[in-house]
Image (cartoon, rainbow, N blue to C red):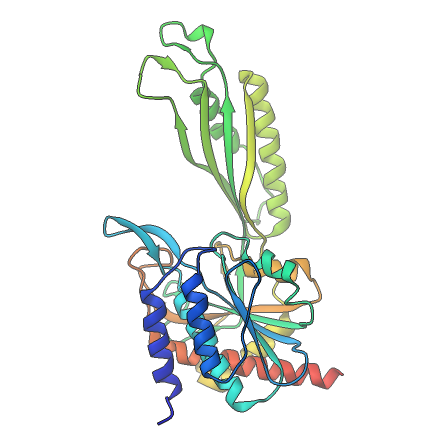
Length: 372
């Protein structure tokens, strides 16, 4: 007896939810996805020297694509650190598999589905760009589950306007000294507190959204009578638009130089992860809106969402400006919130998500064919 879409997707979600793997280590996840796609009669292709895969459905060179992320977070859950699908990527993969099943059965046009590793590291999309797998595409659709504070359960959005993000690590080098002779040293902690204060004086244009703050600092050893000469720190930087992030980085450069001069320390920084802000294409969003209304009705259509979170999906259009991209926001009752170790959502909406993504891909194929 042929397995229904909802039954297949529930089975796949249960498996993926129970077997999370962190970025660049999604080996068994990749194997499972390959097995599921081959069972549909498809021919998935693995990437060389990295996890993840892609699959082409239909005849001809695909000019329309769907993208899902496949990695999990590493976080403390009930007192134990482990891989955990608290960002919904298990649901995203399930929707991509569901869309693949729908498209394979309909054979309504050439579509490429990308199963991308390492979204949580912020560099998985860059690896796929280097692999050239979006070179032929004109449209690319993504998806992300959303919390109740953004979308009512059962309501779906045609666009997610994520912000830009940068995670920066740094080292402050001063001079160690005896605690009784502070004048002989240069206290790295004092320089760090001065940097925190300087960050508060980075101004951006009124009406723009952005923030930069120190989120970690480590300095000193076990002895309390030593002036610490070295401190390491981390900065979390957010901006809703890419030009605002540029302004924040200019301000950070000035802040670092001023603290270096004032305290005669050396401050070295490097960017651990960088995400660009969304550049939503309204043609793609319009097709996704049509797909939402066709599948669930206009009463379940939600507004475009502006989110301070980051997503490496937006690297695709950033590096290929001609690519028309948008992300489906799936209103599925995420609670207590994304990245919470106990995050959960109503997985029954994944079927609607798969149907919407498949329909959006079909509409985009029709749009592409009409312009040929």
